[in-house]
Length: 330
Ligand SMILES: Nc1ncnc2c1ncn2[C@@H]1O[C@H](COP(=O)(O)OP(=O)(O)OP(=O)(O)O)[C@@H](O)[C@H]1O
Ligand SMILES: [Mg+2]
Image 1: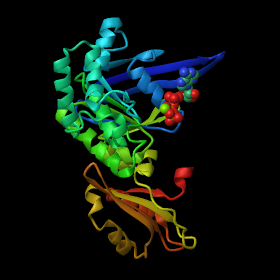
Image 2: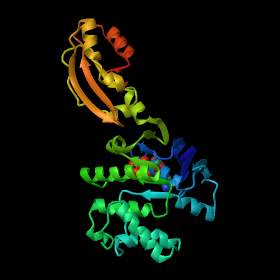
Image 3: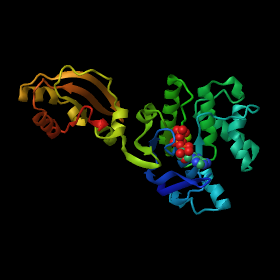
């Protein structure tokens, strides 16, 4: 379990202050994966640095499995940091060392007996699907294989927590999915607590149980993936379940409707059309499965002159999330 409470980080640049983190709080339960998304400059990297205390927070606290990191010093802090494994965009392997020696490196630093370190490294390479590649040098490995070595190395100190900073941003789509499956699988098998920082919604959709949106150093939206996606009023829902652009036909009111859970399979829309005796025009649509739940997102248009109020009221009564198209820009 990771608990972050009211974390603030203020940088000074000459006589100017930059508030990079402005009271960030979050909790990630053991065995789950939490995603943090945000635009460039939102504070994502600062958050990672403050979590590992590579950078001292201005105020606030970070604890891992109940142990306070922010007040630890020297040996305690080093021990606490070993409970955190890190994965970056590039694996940053040592080119002159084999895959096995790269994974064994963190163990050598803490003076594990060499034979033991090598045995453990071999076991970890097997765990990440690289059995047989023990003696390969980084130059002989693909990007995805290098990232697997990086993941094995991150696991060498038996961490409780895995921090992943843009773990797949340098990989092609197929390799990205393979690495995501691996991260998800390891989280379950080793009961890790995982925080993934990313600008790719795909990563959030594929592996995260919950998600936060970071803007200007603040978490502005957060929650379980399904809950956040089901709310058309949230920015995250719009990026998780995007719709293609489509020109309205004439002047009829355009609505966005989101079906999820039980409403996804019920014929609510045709029932509405019958009830109000209206022809509903579908302008755009997408159906996606997130966290094993079905979501259907449609943009529909009512006939010219039709009163949208009762239709919207009816749909909302049926548990459908509805918004007036274009209103998200307001
Ligand atoms: N060492 C520093 N000194 C001063 N300002 C900093 C420092 N590090 C970050 N900042 C500022 O803090 C804010 C957040 O930066 P951060 O690097 O955390 O963003 P980010 O979300 O990781 O962005 P990106 O997606 O581009 O990597 C920015 O305004 C940045 O200019
Ligand atoms: Mg960054």
